[in-house]
Amino acid sequence: MLFTIVSIGLAAVIAAILFVTLVRGRRGDAPTAAYDLRVYQDQLREVERDLARGIITEEEAGRIRNEVSRRVLEADRKLKQQTGATQAPQGANLVAGVVIVVALLGGAWLVYSRTGAPGYPDLPLSARIAAADEARQDRPRQAEAEAEAIPFPNQPAADPEHVAMVAKLRDVVAERGDDLRGYLLLARNEAALGNFQAAYKAQSKAIELKQGRATAEDFATLADMMVLAAGGYVSPEAEAALVQALNRDSSDGTSLYYWGLMQIQVGRPDIAFRIWRQLLSISQPDDPWVAPVRSQMEELAWRAGVEYTLPPLAAGPMRGPSSEDMEAAADMTPEQRQEMIRGMVANLSDRLATEGGSPQQWAQLVNALGVLGDTAQASAIWTEAQQVFAQNPQALETVRAAARAAGVAE
Image 1 (spheres, rainbow, N blue to C red):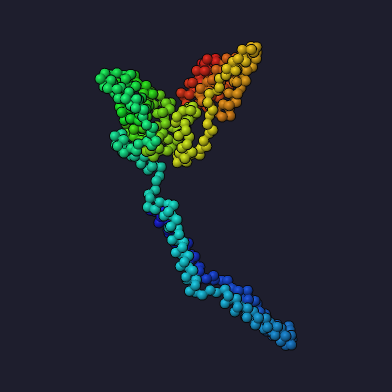
Image 2: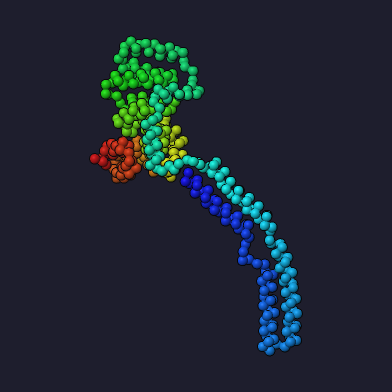
């Protein structure tokens, strides 16, 4: 509200200045003819003084008076013409002033009311963080979200045989009660039919039956089914499953994707951006979360107040030798085979240098250089990898294992 008052006040001051200027007109300015008239009048007075001092004769004074008087009359005529042409009626100036004031104040308010947020309070960073924390605490639970969820469109029709098989599986699992494999199988098949609520209940039972031996993938799958059942919403119950997954594996892709999505939903795009940027750095191009994350990253960076350019999509793993390559290699000498391997390693090295790559690709390069006996280059690649993956211990460990095998890391 304070911003609105200050803005209107400034617009009113500017409008008042323009209004007064129009109504009162410009002071201190005079037409050129008025200036000429004053000069000629001064000349006439100067003629009288020169005549009194005896500098000029009466005849010369009369001739000068006639010439100057003629110029005075001409200047006076021009002065009347210029004054009539430049002075607008007072009423016209008043109307113009009122129009300008109304246009300035009304236009400013119209623009602000459509593009601004009149009446909206200031939102400093601390207030936004507090609001996000409150939204996170007060957001709907899983059951409420499921009740309001909109079914996913274009769901394919289920195969009747598959439906009948899942119905029998439900009966079998219900009879056995503690069949871990049965619950895991039921969870997958319920999800395949789009019965996500039944799927996550079966998955939850399977985790319970594992008695503390559940993996990060188990909890990530549970969270995935909960989010799908809630129409893409990450509920507090799904958040609890994600915490369990990330505590077991901090680099689990599914969990990181939904953890970032939850931060977006509670109003923390800054945290979501950091999570998804880390996720992209450890993901393979064909991972299912890569496409949706990349489609939102630039807008998410803007909302987070970060300058960010989406990097090009990393290529997949280095292509292994084809059957034709193997047949050709069989007829090669050892030196020729060694040269072919060096060419493939060089291609991978160039691609990682220009496009970047996954930890597995870096490990593949270090391992290949070790096989070739090029420990100096393998050591250099390992040193560079330590800088690239300094903020990602899991990825760095993948490359470290290859560096140990190549004999360039402890």
